[in-house]
Image 1 (tube, rainbow, N blue to C red):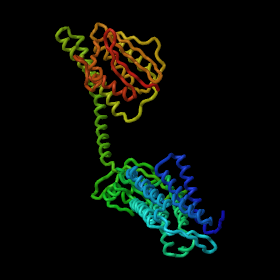
Image 2 (cartoon, rainbow, N blue to C red; image 1 turned 135 degrees about the horizontal axis):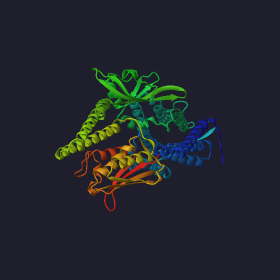
Image 3 (tube, rainbow, N blue to C red; image 1 turned 180 degrees about the vertical axis):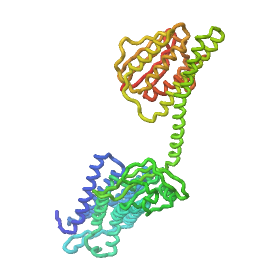
Image 4 (spheres, one colour; image 1 turned 135 degrees about the vertical axis):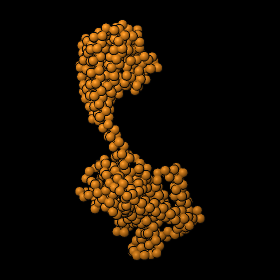
Length: 568
């Protein structure tokens, strides 16, 4: 075989090497970060460039006419689909994935397939009208006179798709602002380079010569270099900014891009609306929105600012520094209007202050007055012999005790509601359970309370209100009992992840259709003398611990209140 050597082949070989390296990089990127349609298409583009430049180099270096023509035909396996691949890659990169359907892919790839068939069959010289060898500057060069099919199916078709790709990229860059224009320009130059070289070759603009060496394949070096710079300079595959246009534009928050001087260089639609509210515009410093924006703090929950007209506006701000090497080149700020949330928060704080005052009144004034009433009523009862009067005093004392119970439950419930700090901690289960059970057993003559022989050593997730849970359940079992002597059995089961306390009684029990509603606010049993808040308080406290409480049937009669608590 005869070979010829020339330095003119070096740009083509450089283009081939760059395409091979970029293809290898995309394969490695897929192995590291997973396969995506964008990466696959990018890999295919580089395979096409490598085939084009590789066979173009072989065609130039070999002198045999038949092999030159064969290499010429083979190089179009890389060239023919390049326009379609570039167009598909641009759709993916500009976040138009929904536009890419199997029908579209088949349609854009049909023309390259038809051209390759026409190129090898060449019916009636449709692709190649004639070939000839030309010797120029000591080199044997193959000249091909192309037919109409080649012009329409190859040159014109690839040119149209490449122009569409360039328009899409530049359009998206214009929407995003000047930050992304250099990347878009580089990619556009890479796509346009082959057609610029074809035009220069057709016009004979030096160093292009219609009778000399075909330098059009060297345009792939420009394409590869442009894509390579975009890839490594702007992290083209790792952080394709154009691909996030839709997400940025449709964000419910205002997204602001600032340059190194803290001036606004780009905003999304929501950000533009915020700028208009504050009488600011792109190009203004960020302080035009609010002088209190602190770019050194990643998140500011509530920044007060004032819009035109003097109306107070509250913004939630998140900022992210943009760095290139060790240098800060800008910031991305996300602003959300939280004025309504701020108002709701202030309303809640005001209500909490009123509830705190009410809690103090319940805890001190009402409870102290009730203690005085009960004490005097009991003294009077002891000194009165009239049976009718004693019954009335007994009613006063009973209702007074219920009122006192109500103040205790309201106090505990409000304490639970108003506590805005996390109070849950590892708490010994046996301490509050044994204390409350012993208090009920020792303080109630007509009740028998049995406990396990050995207190459990388990600790659960709870706080100081755990005793209130057991106190309400135990007194509930006594108060609602319809037998001569209330019998209450307390048991504890320690499991892998939780501890279960069962408080069983011999009372009337609870109907199935009321086993859940008894824990509702204000719910109480029929003919119950209670306040209806005790079980609601129990359920509220236990739920705050991440536990559960429910009712089961006892045998032969009665109810079992079950409390499940998480182990600490």
